Length: 293
Image (cartoon, rainbow, N blue to C red; front, side, top):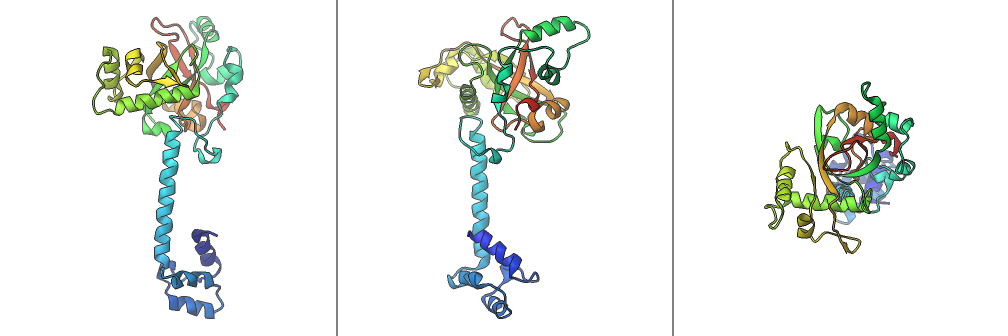
């Protein structure tokens, strides 16, 4: 039995409520024993030269260390695949539940209706055709307003996502997490690395400006600056997109799983509509009811 469980058990079953644990002396414990209280194990603490308050402080410190380690592990979950028990994850999800929707979208399905509705009254037929040609795209949150990671009302908040619309890395969660890690490191550099294109220099500035709104492709200068590779191969890609997205309270509460971002930062969206510079124009949240645990 751990010290914490030992003390709680003794306190609950043996020591009268008028005594405060931190004030108990060896003599008081002896008196309690004479009164029939089972305090032998508690007496052993004194006999080892330790005071109960010291033990409690040690327990408190150990608990703080455990909490810090858990928070660090959960933060790490955003950037790499690690094994964490589901019950230890604040907002776990199961993306495999979305497998039936990854290849084709049924415009009349509950999946579409509960995620993005029935479309505008004017131009609905065109909208329906665009959605039918759309795709479910996984994104990884690079950065976001803190309130988006927890329950609570918002007025309006912005997040930055990284995604791949097509090609071999599309919807590859591990790849997306690696990109998110690289972009976080890029943002946190004291100075923008040398040798980058003007677009990537601007991305560095945008990531460090909470008011920036942008939509840009990562080019090779940034990937090469980090020697970015995946599964042992150098990554050459012009299909990695980094974009901001605004969120209002109704979206947060109704569309995100349990009303806030998943702990691992992977957000599936329905992408549709054509864009001159990118594959898709519009991105709407997949309803969290389809992939939450």
